[in-house]
Amino acid sequence: SKFAKTFVGFKESLDQIDNFVSRRTTSIFSDNPPLVICGPSGSGKTALLSYWNKQWHNKNLNPKIHLIHYIIGASVNSSNHMEVLRSIYQEIKIRFSLLGEIPTNPERIMDEFPKWLGMV
Image 1 (cartoon, rainbow, N blue to C red):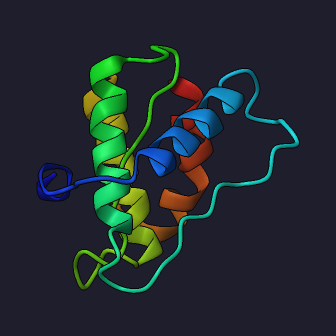
Image 2 (spheres, helix red, strand yellow; image 1 turned 180 degrees about the horizontal axis):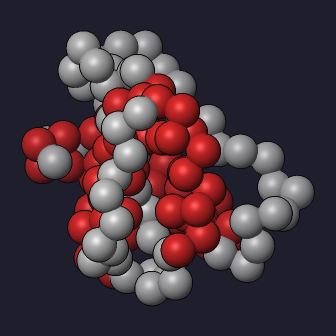
């Protein structure tokens, strides 16, 4: 990602993300609250997460966890929920070498999503 190359600083924030993810690796159903990253436009949210994602994959902290990095707001269609799901389908298909066809019908996209997650 072009955003990961331009990131500088925020060591404390990177550590907080690492700690959050390490708590989630024991159980995705934990009582830990969600991690929210917010700030004004241009404050570095996307760069922070892109950089963290790149570092996480480089360190391979837990090979059983697969992260899908998707930037909402990077393009006109990126916040459309169907586009988000199509992108996740594509990432799953490529990463896990699945042969199934990605659904195109909006109803099938929604209905088959849990099945695809179950396959991986």
